[in-house]
Image (cartoon, rainbow, N blue to C red; front, side, top):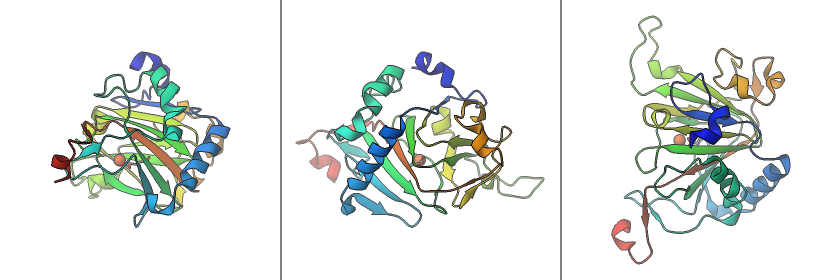
Length: 240
Ligand SMILES: O=C(O)CCC(=O)C(=O)O
Ligand SMILES: [Fe+2]
């Protein structure tokens, strides 16, 4: 896949991650946000620190997806043609994402460091809408830092600033060997070329020249390929 994405590579990272700041237009962003808002309230799962929609549906207990197409508004123009042109999912089992999470974070909200696990092929493509946010990556091992006595997981190993309308692709060891999370804060701080791995690829560095950014509501569309798809008629064994 990487040939078409090579200019978007985040070279400060040891394994594969790519960032495209202008992935969708402002009109497309407005339209996508209106589609997210148009979903009926029961589509949302309210968690304590964010809310989310799961398309086409939540995975079964055995981590299978019940075969069902993604809605048209999540397919075009993001998958067709843009992901296809970039070849992002060329190496994944179904050659296309079949599952999308819509996460909405208000100021002060976030997601605890976690890994996405074996249900998905290790490629994640995230489109950011509405406002910038910092995604942080942590070592998996919880150990004590000898100098500071802090738990190692308290400090991110890498930080990526995701601007609104951007695409972030992470794969392989970024997926399997690290945890990722979003701090529960009203303000992202320490923004600058030292700590933000994709600083050179940002659309608007000036906006962060003060070193911080006040959070506003940020919505993400997280595209992945679920490995196991259960066809209708064959679903009963997956539902058990
Ligand atoms: O909102 C994001 O960018 C991250 C979401 C995430 O990590 C997840 O839903 O597993
Ligand atoms: Fe995640």
